[in-house]
Length: 131
Image (cartoon, rainbow, N blue to C red; front, side, top):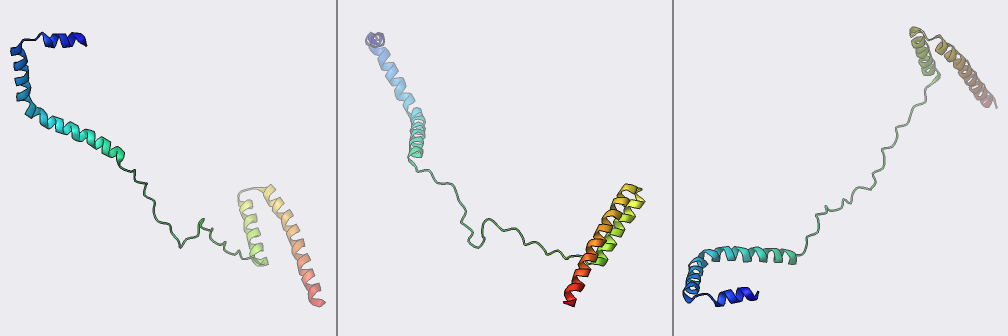
């Protein structure tokens, strides 16, 4: 640092005047650049001073219960004996067309069990009606 100060002290007067005159001529063009630099620094400092805006949160919807309940299940109509017989017969026919003899045998076994349970229900209803 002392070498720079010694160098400036040893400059001739004419050189110092020429450097000062050059700065005087260049100063107006540097003024705009200086103002932009000052505005830039102020913008950063003002931006830091501004409060941060919270993120946008949409208003609450009051007329909806959350979570939305699932739709009510539609009641399933219990099939009567005729619909049940038709479904079993259709299944049996499809198994025969597909050449599935084991499936046909199982359907016959299950059908006999179903017939027994239906007969038991019918007998119970008759007994209840007689009492």
